Image (cartoon, rainbow, N blue to C red; front, side, top):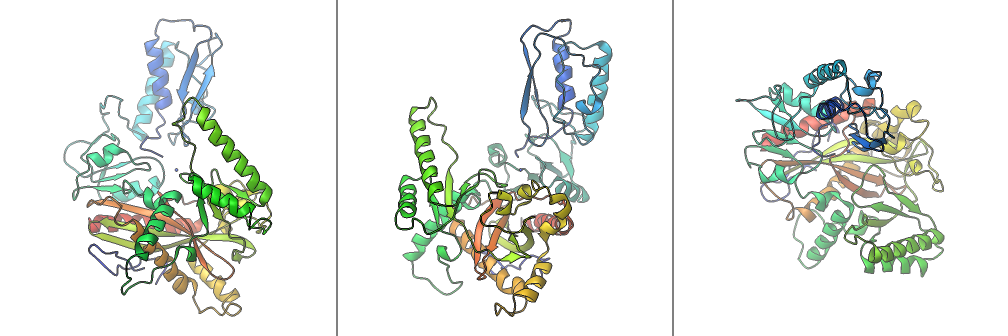
Length: 506
């Protein structure tokens, strides 16, 4: 099987078919100019700013956070504002952007109007009341909506190459394709099955969150244990591909974990990794290296639980976490830790059509040290590696193609480990497919199915020094950046093939 192509489907209809970042907010640069102008117009005639009044402006950039600055009763000179502080060519407001005062001169207001019109050429907008700007396409045609930024440089050109026109009003219902980073109820409520395509199955969290996948696999295990297994793929036991895992938001599991580690297993040197269930890019992850760490973690959880009982808003539940056994003997490539990102495509849900595709290998910048307190030595994703001061110099070495990985294993491990030739592209690929299919079968009856729903899921695998394959997690809306040569080869082709198969099978 070539790593550059999708696995061919083996089954159809209601059975599994195999061959083996957010939100809909638009990141638009004219928000700064627009808000400044509207505020000035609404305050026209006021020459003074009231003392102590606060002015706020939404920071429109990748983080979309809001920043607030007090004026302290003095008027700022906005005429001297640097143009780059008002708007950037790519439409994102920089972090150093200035706040505009309510008072603006006539000439300044005129300048702002011109800037707003110029920006709208690059990023047409829709007013809060739904009024359309002149650039919003109307009439007959095939339209698509793209929300967010992940994959924009691939999805938008693909759709435009098909002659589709981009719309910017997320409330419109006359689209052919809607691709958004976050799932909004209105998208699915107005969806017309068989006529439209929507990226992301609405309840994919049963597969793509840590607790969702854990619960689905456990339930599938319980059901299968009561049903006589027929012919077909051998069902794997969870412990064959999922590291030992405990839910910290379930009291019985939490207590069982602490009893195990503080009792029989105390002093055995087990390492654990704690992961929030709904976050990505390594956010919120930390390691428990010894008994002292575990005891401190238990105290923290108990204090947090006590605080919940007394807090003013007890319904605001903290982020749920899982504790998973840390694989302390990972296979290394040139002394560095790595994992493998592969793709699982659900091209159609009625009937199910699913495919596997090879992805790429992600390596750390630093040599592996299990005792390191630097998370970038333990987590391989690009978000973490970019924090390493060596990243810019080693960027191309942090991502390998599957072909390079296969050649390295052939050269360095085939004889010492008695592996068959091309173990990566054959044995490893089949194992990944087997694990993906088991996970899919565990959620197949739970997923919402309508003709036109499709999903691309990033699956992360780790190989230990005994060449055992572990599933780390499955991710919805996987990162589609192309900041190095291997990613430029793999990611665009994956996305365009995803769109092609979704369109074909829907």
